Amino acid sequence: MILSLRATAAAAVLAVCAFAVSGCGAPTGLGDGGAAPPVAAQPTPQPLWPNWTEGARKRPAPAGKQPPPAPLANGPEVPKAGLAAVDPYEVLRADPRTKALGHREKIHRPGQPGIRPPVLRDLTGDGSPELILAADLESGRTVMAVYTARDGKVVPVLYTAGKQLAVETVGTDLVVRSSSDDGAEQAVRYRWDGARLESVSDIRTYKRDESEAVAPEDGP
Image 1: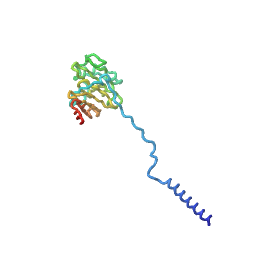
Image 2: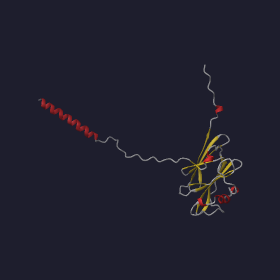
Image 3: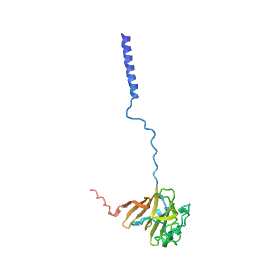
């Protein structure tokens, strides 16, 4: 009798274990989803003229409505090497808006008038860089123009001006940072729309005037 009871108990234990094992293999709604997809690195701002980035605190003048981009009538031919092989001074003199700047000297640091070093950046995403030119004037204003190449011709795609512009690229976007006389800091972001560089954001921020801060009341 005792042996029979022990056999029955052992059978029950084996049945419970078998149920537990089979339960472990049952779907629970949770499973291995595989390796997590890699996180794409976000582009970081890349200043075009680092020496001019710090202390640029003036707002650029509104560019206004841009005319349909057309090749410069008297612009230089663009060879197979692209805009890197084009004389930037020829481009400036061929553009009616920058013609007067075409004879200024090149500069390598802020604080004096002249033409900043030309910069090449791919702003259209086609693998060929655009030509970015800027001139600092005696008045403290800066004129900036961007050119692309199309069918061997130089095409202006952006023109803007303002006080002490600081410019950088974020991916293929062009960001112009500045500030206005009322103390507002501004960042205008331009993006290629297939024909020209168009503004996609215009953010103005204001710093709090510490002189207007309310002093805490004295305690009892």
